[in-house]
Image (cartoon, rainbow, N blue to C red; front, side, top):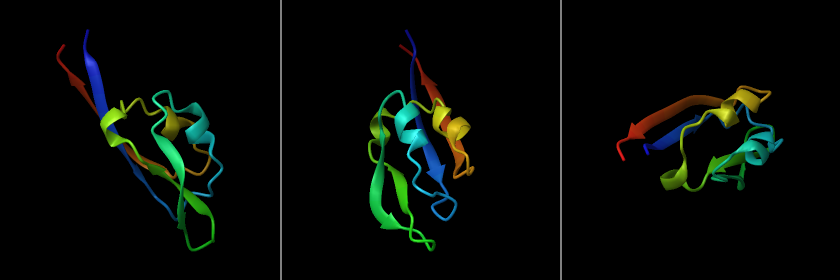
Length: 77
């Protein structure tokens, strides 16, 4: 069975820390960071890139289009 590996790019200035992406992330690799953007919102971060699958669910549920790029690579079994 093939396995996927991925990563995302987060536009921290667009992020308002609503945590929808965290809730819907199947591999649970996102969390709220201690960093704040210019609007004083805590922003999300990808804390476990090694286990990100690049599924793009986080980007699809983000109401603020803060997840701007999703990379996904399918690895041979």
